[in-house]
Length: 165
Image (cartoon, rainbow, N blue to C red; front, top):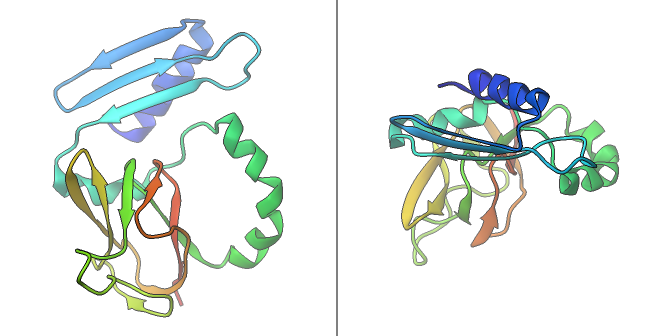
């Protein structure tokens, strides 16, 4: 099941008026809960169990519906977005704990100013006691690291800004 099929399912459930839908397949488990009558967007929980080889492809996927918490942050970031528009944002493909280093006694994978190539490991995200390497899907130069080391991250949360030129 790809992201477009999941998005279509979310839209269908939202329009149908169902309050909760659960779907379980071989490699994926999805629960979609629509909000109360006063909410304009559905609240969605997606849990995926995907083989490690597919994890780096997740940043290409489009964003899920915005939650009310994300809407409040949008006005604060309007000015920086204009200058950041030339940069590519690398986002978290999973929920977990962000680590810049492979282990506490090792140097960070990348620093601001580091040149990266497609396939380079940028960080690791720990999820359920598994450490997942997050690889770059673009080549360029790290402009900004948006998350502190050992911080929790959400799905689709921006991690790095990369200048592709």
